[in-house]
Length: 337
Image (cartoon, rainbow, N blue to C red; front, top):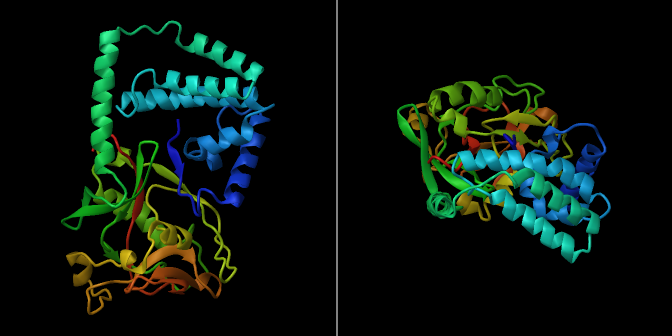
């Protein structure tokens, strides 16, 4: 159900993101649609606590009536992949019930108890089997989460004869955000000097087609999630970010690279042997400049990048510069690694 996640262009605590997404959620609640629009895929999961705080009150039954069936489908999907223990939904519903009692939300409490009864009365699992399944789940979860702790590196896929090593940037809801540890290709942001956005640039097409098909096997590809990529404006030069996109592979934005990397030294990267053979720019220390997806200054002819010393250039460089390297970014399901 939730096969899309949001790349979250700025801090999760940012008021403007919360207001926008909560507003969209309210519109969805008042509509006849059973599934939320693409803009709030992932937001509902990643921001559940804040959404509960916002929605708890007169609209709670309406919210729960739409939200819990979706969450149940998501839970069943996670259970089938070994990422959630059986009856995990009962724990979630019970936590809502506790909150409803605490907040004296009588109508919501009654609705939740009825939903719990309708959904789970016919489910019977032997207690010994439950204990065994819980233990197996906890072992799988502990191993996966230990492997995908932020800052760790994992191997996944290959490109031009070299295994791809990825750095973990974020971990949420059984999914990890990964960026290639090195620059894996030398390409311009766009093949021609043109007025261009992330939606239309040639590097996005290459990531979604050429790289995706070359780097991952048919078994690996389903683990990579479709991401709702938010293309925000460049706040420093007031250039427009363009339309949001749905991508399996993308680049970090200016806001994201500053959020996920605290210091300039952490942003420095080197090139693979393949990239070195293509003549990409490499400094005396072996570091490279790498593209971001955000626009720079002077309209659409510049795109942001990270210099070889790790400094973020929000002004950007000309989009047809072919000396910069590419660091792909993906969201993946943690289970199965």
